[in-house]
Image (cartoon, rainbow, N blue to C red):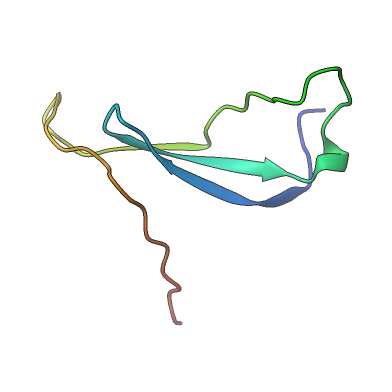
Length: 68
């Protein structure tokens, strides 16, 4: 199964102009191996663009709590 317990979310602003959101699993949910680096696929990719052309670059990310 590809499901795991999620520790949290990690947002990354990259030099390619995109921001990615990764779902970070609890370490005990990841299969043990000889490697200390794991490659995960982002659960979301955010692009700042106008049309098909990327014209902006993500330089930081700010989380905010939404009040109900």
